[in-house]
Image (tube, rainbow, N blue to C red):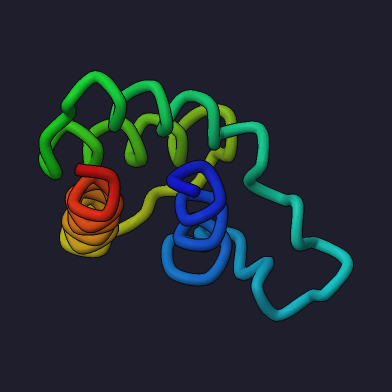
Length: 89
């Protein structure tokens, strides 16, 4: 379930390439899901996730996103992790 939520957040919220506007690009960020999932599963903080997203934006994507936006996405990912953990306890 967390894997799916990460995929959705990266595509619809993070979206540094504006791929969400293109139906054929739904899988644009799928290659980053395992890395983000591993970080979340290891207990990464929202700040650590924001740094990870910034690194992905710089290379391999090659764009420079907003630190504030990455922090908001990191916060959202941590919220999803905690929400889903609460469902399974």
